[in-house]
Length: 313
Image 1 (cartoon, rainbow, N blue to C red):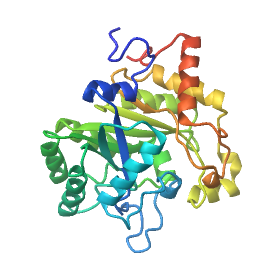
Image 2 (spheres, rainbow, N blue to C red):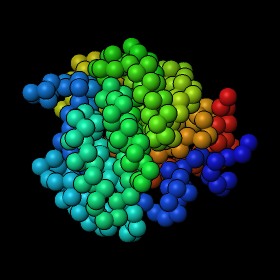
Image 3 (cartoon, one colour):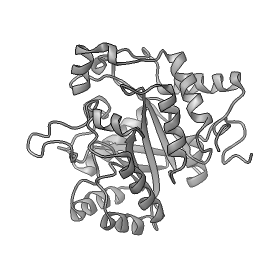
């Protein structure tokens, strides 16, 4: 098989993808532009997905009370303390559904981000029921000058699971939105959660087969984490027997099984999610960072002598 990545890696890595795209290191700068979601109450902003608490993954500098420019400035300073300085940045509209607004508001926010020095594109996190042709046409025009990707929260291919977690959309809607976006020539990403209540190993691996048939550019995998302040935290407290958690070793093997079935042209952005310990209600992997999980996953892939797409058909 001809791999779309360097042969010394066993999967299509996100870092190498950007090296191929830009020829240099690129840093994502997370933003909270004050959006909501269509499955939240318009007045109280309560409701939403049963597992969701955005405070658990927003960097400290992110706040909708700050302008886009201020958040980008603070984001650059934040990352300079942790990493070597990047030459280019992507403005990452992350919190909630970042196309859930009228086109004029979106243009104002996106174009403020794109005017910031060094920003070369947008990463837009949203839902498949928050997209339309007007937005897609606008983003298709932007992609002629900037890197643009829409990352869709898909989470599961099982309709009953999506109903249980109150996603408010179907997998069919995800398929349709991803295809419409790709047909406009816009990069697409998918977020998937492994270990949602009621799903077994076969269900999750079937999800890999289903997303592999879609025209997605990137994928993020997250283990299920029970986060404080969510409906799922309440459900876990009342009925812990309904939840199945993986040890780190079990999860790594599951991710590798998932990647063996995954289209090798899909770039793997992340294997797992990180939640600050103060937010974590259910079992976790302990004080281990995503980069450590990456190292252990690649080591285990070597032990199993396998690679992304080995079983892809």
